[in-house]
Image (cartoon, rainbow, N blue to C red):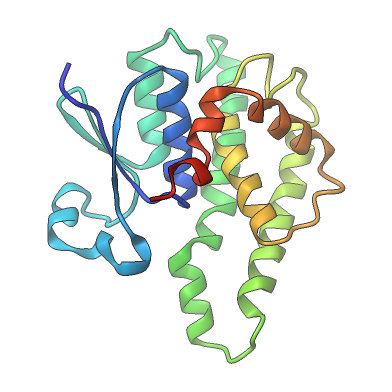
Length: 210
């Protein structure tokens, strides 16, 4: 098998999701850091790999894969030994709903380029922090209601799925921005359960920071 390479920014939620997936599948991989703060994602050599100029990019199976959820679903389909998506079609929909709620509703509006633009059009000193807290708190409140209907030690069931791969990085961001997690008991419990697993521990930003 050819070398698996992950183009990664250590604090990126999307990259964090894919690191967890690779660890759960016991896939060895090499990280090539892409420093977003220094604009490495805008350089021609990186854009040749990923025309969107986003992270992560995964090179695996002779393919260049982009978009974190598309990468995770690819891994789930070609390596089904780790149940990133449940076998039951109804449960698969629930897992996708949770994952998409994070990746498509909370994450985009709190992404770096969005917040950078916000700070360029206002002189309010704490605009960035207020923005992040507001939208992350609102998103987690809705997410708490969603997974509160499900049973198991994880977001859905007793094994980690794609939902948890999205939830954990979002909780990391929430704590980073000082979001009050008191009311999100189910989310906090799932995050704590994930934190017990080596795959999640080894993917944590503090463990992979260059």
